[in-house]
Amino acid sequence: MENTEHKDDIKITPNDKEFDQVKLNTWQSIKQFLSELFDIRADTDRDATIDAVKKDISFKGHTAWILIFSIFVASIGLNVSSTAVVIGAMLISPLMGPIVGIGLSVAINDVDTLKRSLINLGVMVFLSVLTAFLYFKLSPLTEETPELIARTYPTILDVLIAIFGGLGLIVAKTKSGTIASVIFGVAIATALMPPLCTVGYGLAVGNASYAGGALYLFSINAVFIALSTFIVSKILRFPMVRFANSKRRKRTAQIATVIAIAVMVPSVWLFIKLLDQQVFENKTRDFVKNIVKYEGAEVVKFTHDYKSRNIDVYLIGRPVPQNKINEWLSKLEKTENLEKTHLRIYQGSDQSSEVAAKLSGAIKAGILEDLYVKNEQIIQNKDEKISFLENEIALLKVQNIPFQELSKELKINYENVETFSYSNKITTNFKKTDTVPVISLRWKKNVSSKERKAELKKIESWLKYKLKLDSLQVSEYP
Image (cartoon, rainbow, N blue to C red; front, side):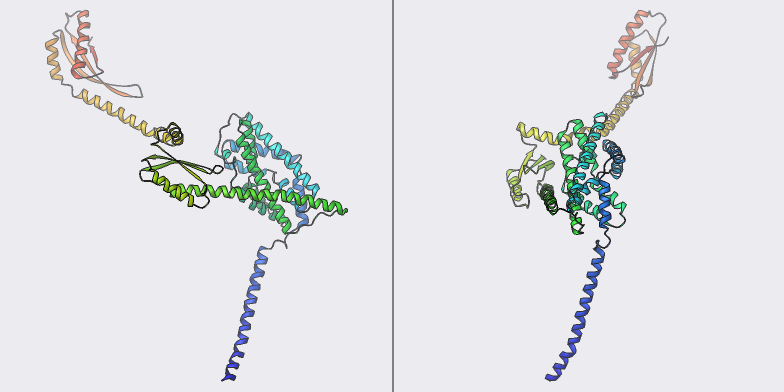
């Protein structure tokens, strides 16, 4: 039996080895497939990429005029809030060249290219802001549009767009035969030009916060595009610039390292800060939506401030008791990323002038807009219905005149009247239609003009009182 078992073991061992070999071959095939799928080194033309980047840095002649015209187009697009026009301006803008040049020159220790890139970028930014400033200063249209306001503050999404857009751009440039569609797409996505136009707008209208926020957004885009270029250039091992003097080579390498650190450290800090701010805003919205609830009370508005960590919620309707507010505060302290946040509740039942003023300011835009703007058409329709019903009521009053009774009383009280007739006259001023009862009298021949005038006035007063009418026309036959 021992020999049998030993023979059985010998039979199993080759199968195990074959299975292991199959697994190894499969894994190697997968690795090779993934390597070929994502490897960009084989198809990278480093020398051609460096030459192309250096060529795009230049800023003179045609490039300067293209930048000026694209700034005008972008400013007009922002002015009229036209997304299509703004996209067109971004496609023809040459701003991307010097920014990519900065990232590449730092990666390959090329100080001369770095200086040229920084100078050209500075001139481009100055010319762009000056052009936009002159346009908005001379333009009679200075209203804040959604396109302009959207470029006044950066978010974490802008950082992510700049990072991945910059990566896509430099990878496209390193490929043998540049992918033009990718470069155009990156130019649209990263949106370098609209923030500079918004800086000019902010300076033109005297709004420093708009100008500062837009310049901040442009700086974020530029820094992260340059940083992406630097990282890809290092990964692809672009050749370093060679110097005959070893001391100069070391000094250049040190300068490039310092610049790289100076760019990367603030970039990482900025990314973390904006990410934290975005998380705070998202958590705040979720907390107010899901936690701040009370039957009979409605949240009309809420605001949040990342710097002060304050959340202000404005309620209207049924007063929320303090124990419920304390429950909200307790849940806020246990909410991740909102632990040190202050929740302040403002209710419509609060009578203090400070709270009333804040609540009034909070609900003014929403409530009054609903009452006086959105319902304007409804109010107008109701006025038309009221006017129509008033006319119908007046018409019914006229139609129900007791003609026979009036005729008898008139004959008894005014013997000088020979005939008495009644009719309805419909009049309009093209805005309102009205029905007026008309009483016509014919006098006996021997009645003097003076007597007719006096009795006509009495008859008119009597008929108005008798019929309870505000408008009545009494006339006499010729």
